[in-house]
Amino acid sequence: MGSTETGSAGRSLRRGAVLAALVALTSCSLLPGSPKPTAPPPPTIDSSAHWRPGLSVALPDSLAADFIQLQPTLRGQVGMAIMPVGGGRMTIFGDWTSGIAWSTIKVPLAMAALRHDPGESVAEEAEAAITVSDNDAAEALWESLGDGLEAARAVQDVLDEAGDATIGLAGPRTHLDYTAFGETEWTLANQVRFASRLPCLPQSERVTQLMGEITPTQAWGLGVISGSAFKGGWGPDDETGIYTVRQFGLVPTPSGQVAVALAAVADSGEYEDATAILTRLGALLSMHLPELRGGGCPH
Image (tube, rainbow, N blue to C red):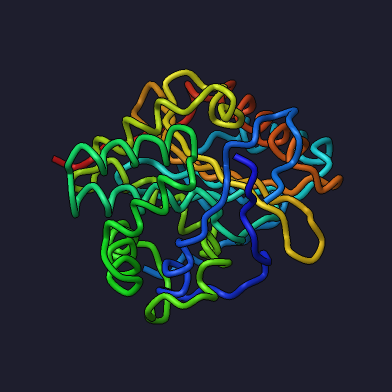
């Protein structure tokens, strides 16, 4: 697919506008090395480049030290948030804290659509939207939820269940929403919180399964970790053309699963360089998996 996710990364967060904007979500099937595409409140966290021990009891000092050593070599702005599945303390690394969700928003969209209609047709669209980030499939999922206001509320309900904090009220779709699809601004803190609750939400099994079946050409970042389940998204800033690349998911550790959210903007502004940064962060996490404190869903 040759379309692109459009919009400016500095847009303010709006509860429904963010979700009404889902309509025009663009292609996340860009492959590394291929041409660019053509077409509850968060906790107060110091998200500076240095890890602060007071933020979490779940992460080892060695991971913090290795991140601090790695960051200056990454040649870009980065963010990484980690939280045990089922709840617990959150730790944020890096200097990137918030931006447009791009196609990572397809995860709560697919959940909302499958809850509304678990039939074969919707299930097939959900598979395409998650595993290969197909935008036509995402559009079909959105339309299956009703009109713009109904669809926005359905997706917002999924976010709210996981404790995501967004504000405002969705309005009916307009012609402007078409160009804004995917422009939900999703903070790194809220995204990792959503991920930490995702496997514990009712009727989430199919979506988390699909997140474990991502096409190999999009398996950068957390994709280097065996057994991980994840979804990525990316797009250029309208004014600068600089790409932001995001990803979130679930990673297995000996003590349970951890939720992880990643983001990168390469100094070059290029998609390929940003995905390479996320892969280096994934490799860093992989080295420290035995030390991480995971969790699980309460019974």
